[in-house]
Length: 295
Length: 295
Image 1 (spheres, rainbow over the protein chains, first blue to last red):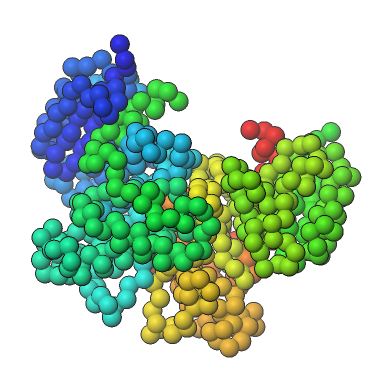
Image 2 (image 1 turned 135 degrees about the vertical axis):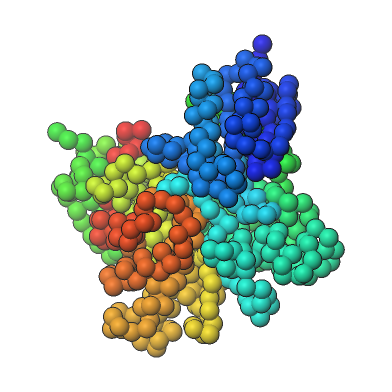
């Protein structure tokens, strides 16, 4: 019998738990609302208890303590979600299961899922996954490993050129005003144009501006990290017309400076939507569980 | 007898070659002008031939072909330096020596030198080294390895917020105008203020503006990569008064968003001058040679 791995994506609204051998062979899956930590985590643990698992990957909502040297490693840190601050997720799972466990941010697991499971990404050593939705974040894979560093990337808070003549909107990040997230997350589109982004038509100028900020951020990522592929997920990126505009603008911004065959074409294979659709994080958590038992 | 390693830093003006066991035990060293490829590389090879070496690290000026799958791997690519375009550096050394050889950009070798040899950096897994001088570039170490990705980082070309009311200077990068290098390299200081940066007094407003751009770039690096330390070298950074200004401004830009004990202090140990002074690259080339024989 093939080995089984568990993955949990724990969001602020709902949890998804899955068990399987690989993305196209999920043998059991459940989703339920995020209520109290006790109730929600007990539900997840009860689901995984039904199976004989080799390893489990946990991708709860952040902020998380990811420093293995910290006494709070494996916990959710201070969060506005009532009752969830300082919840020791990994500790509860460790008391319930005697198998290897991975614990990381949802966006890091999503990056690892895209890196590990998507056929086009086989053979790559680096990849950056952005989620662009209510928040903006990135998971970075370098030499096949998720980048943590001092804490973990917070790529949504990079600062970008902001032409206030073209776009007088001041940005809405409570910490940084007009950082990438402050200018380009979903709520910024709504605030700037006075209507929800998801009902703006494709030809609305909102989308050229959105593509501009995303392209500026990606150009900076390319200059700093030279990743082999960039995956763009999240609610805002469901507007597929953004992709060609972003690719065109990234090429203009690089201005032929980077010499790689990749940049001679139209970037269709370089800046891509998620190969796993909305399941990058849950499948990434499973991929990381599998990876734990193989490395 | 201890094992001997060779390092070569090949600049556009001069070459430095050194042989030793470690940074404080260099047993032979030479420097000579960069003339023709034949004459210059023959001189370097003749110097190393005097010794029984375990391995050699080569850090010539770029642009370099660093793709091991490319037929031109190990060469200098198209360069304005007369006679040097398409010079196969690694190939010449391989024909002359039958020992392991490392080949990388000077700024990458400098990052590795700081990472490997400086006592304060022992135990780190990530570090970013910036050179800020006539050009601006960065070497990035993640999980103990130099980041290459698709080609290699070109961090000098990141775009930053540019407040044209405060600084109407349009930038001088021939490719990107007001990118980081275009706004903040040594020649940009000269062009903006009409006098060479190295003769401007410490209290000149040039330095606050310079610190602003460097801090913006470092904040973006921290948001994207979360490195454990940032080292700033190069001619511009010899103006030591820049360091406290950069540290203060980086803290303001992060605005308490990143939760790490590192950012609770004054960043004196986080944003630092090179521990190896001007010898980061030559000692990094030696460190990489040593690393080759150990891994």
